[in-house]
Image 1 (spheres, rainbow, N blue to C red):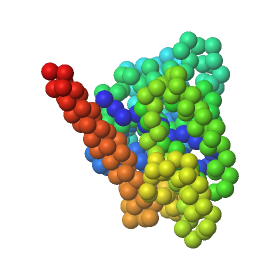
Image 2 (cartoon, rainbow, N blue to C red; image 1 turned 30 degrees about the vertical axis):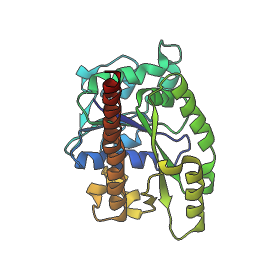
Image 3 (spheres, one colour; image 1 turned 90 degrees about the vertical axis):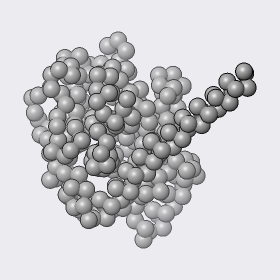
Image 4 (cartoon, rainbow, N blue to C red; image 1 turned 180 degrees about the vertical axis):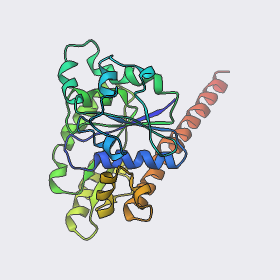
Length: 277
């Protein structure tokens, strides 16, 4: 069964898509079967992996509206081992309106992804920069959420609203949704502002803030124009090293800590059974 993780922040330009692409590539490079789902009508995750945004092929839009299924070739193989893509296109912008009157409108993505859960170790979902119906679908479908936060003053605005949205989803539509972590992006160690923003975010999220911060990098900015994740575009760059470290942190949180938690629950259950006997 897949670990379904989403990247969410209603503020644009915080490194959400960059993180989704490069974490997906990092997980694939670590031998995890990974599917990246592009739920943003701008289709930047799609083009960032070298695919055309204007293709007429069936994509996530058709899958959400029930006009295509798993048999229609919606999954695209990338040129990287273990990494597949469920691409987007500009039509997805209209899906938010078209889904309004549909039954179970907030659960359409979760249902659409069900046939793929056994095929992948990780399914990563890139969300649109909003808190609308498409993002709600993403939060309902996911098991965990990763929040990218830019190290700028205005990036702090809206975090409370985002957290309130996640809390409401957890209390009703998806009780299993957990915060995996917060990743600080565009970090500049030379500025006081970057350190201050990190400190403020840690006050709110505590140890949920990943140790790895993603710094500003020219090579990281260049990689999407070549349709390549940074670890393949320039594996020796600081951006590639940072996302490799972040990948290992995510694997630790999802696989090692989750496994330890399950083990503790099994031990506790065994003790309870022995006590009952």
